[in-house]
Image (cartoon, rainbow, N blue to C red; front, top):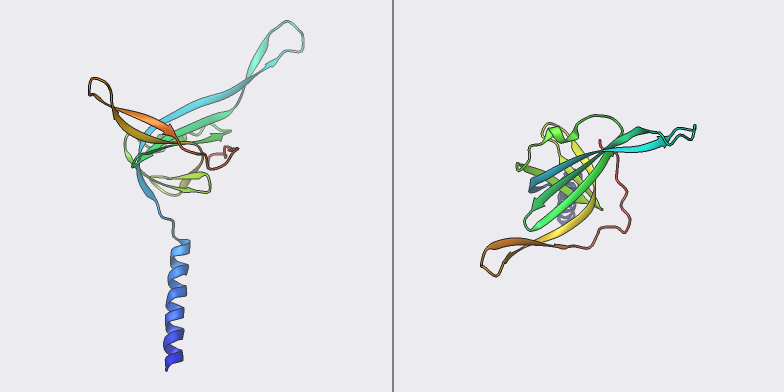
Length: 153
């Protein structure tokens, strides 16, 4: 009888761990800014006349998300022209998670946008000499010494 209870307790603990291992937990935050930049390079003409043509390489997306007193700056790039910024509205609440130097921004419809965490800042409220409330930011240590921007998915 005691062995059956022990087996039931072990089975319950293992099944609970399995359920929590597959689930993704998100933090609530606010989308502060989206910066979209075209990445181009120039290729000189071989004729030597000093002319060059711009070549489109891709698009860089940078998202700024604040949660509690931390500001996250995440980035990804895309070869195509899809507008990843159009899925969200600035200053709206968002859900995200951070895992091993990656920031996963939950899409409004389905899935996640994977970003590299380029920097993190602690936002500290301060008062200037006139007593006006302002915000200052202190950089936090990076997750990794070298960040590689993933392709947007």
